[in-house]
Length: 143
Image (cartoon, rainbow, N blue to C red):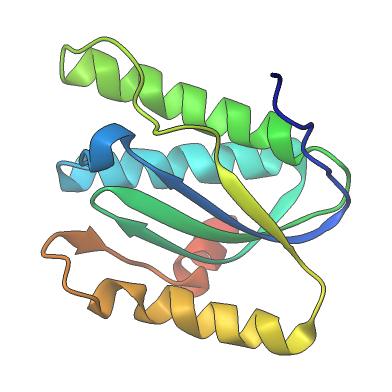
């Protein structure tokens, strides 16, 4: 049975994606840096605003805002490009991601603030390897 099509509207979204079998998708600092560069490039290309994010060793969280219905196109480019980079670098083949990215549209202002806190506090959970930066680092690169 085919999966249901993703409903995409302009707005704010919480995005999550995880490595297959909970595998580490970021092994070194340069992997995090490459993902960030790729994310910034794709966001400029698709007109997407980043509000908050957290990159953990085996998954990531994004809080983004789209102005058009291009969420799936953006995520396809981001995940595909990073998977190609990762598989070449680590001489592996096959899927990198556990499945389609998960997304939730934010419609409640109170939930937006709760989510921002959750994303910021996520690295404080018992994961050993994480890399975390806030919006101000993204904004510095835009000047």
